[in-house]
Amino acid sequence: MDIYLYGCGGHAKVILDILCKQGRKVAAFVDDNPPIGFTHIHGIPVKKNVPETLAEIECDRSQWIVAIGNNPIRRRIVEKLDNCGYSFTTAIHPSAQIACGIEIGSGTVIMANSVINTDSIIGNHVIVNTGATIDHDCIIGNYSHIAPGCRLCGKIKLGEGVFLGVGTKVIPNINIEEYATCGAGSVVVKSLPSLCLAYGCPAKVVQTNYSQ
Image (cartoon, rainbow, N blue to C red; front, side):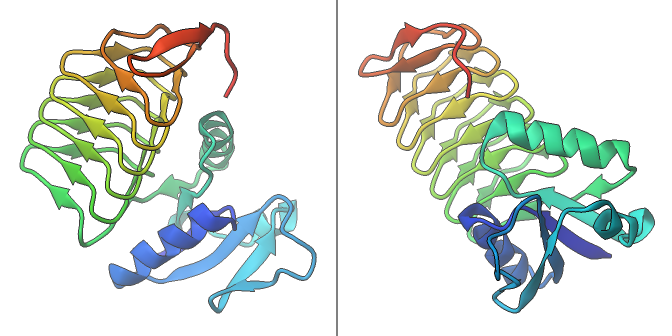
């Protein structure tokens, strides 16, 4: 089964490294607008996303990971590929610590030195970035992004598309609603509403109807 990465930035290169460490081969990167003259990454071809490119990739012989860090954009591209009939795969770094009773959705990426503790549920197309920890009984919604070094205590629920900036800490039993954004270094001690921007210690909502 050929694996394709949608995107060719730094995030995509990290995913390539994970897949290589898993002993899996990436066939190509596909990008809407790769830099001019940018034809290969570590020997893997970069293809421009045009109808001809997708037409030559067979649905039943390929799997995808959307290697885009921005949550709404990642969701849009996933929906586009899904409508074309493509399927998705996960990438889990060998150094990640995954406890028993974990559910991990399709298209999700678990990066180096991250920890996911028992009975947590990780949705589809989630990014658990380098060194992040998720404790027991957490629920992480589809398209969420947990940045490097985040610390989530037990029984936390993240809605769809939540972004936790680098080093964010969340105490137990907190709900963070869909497409909320927490700035880097925040300490979340109260539940947060959807579409908000919050940051600080303790984290406070500073903007509503915030667009990622």
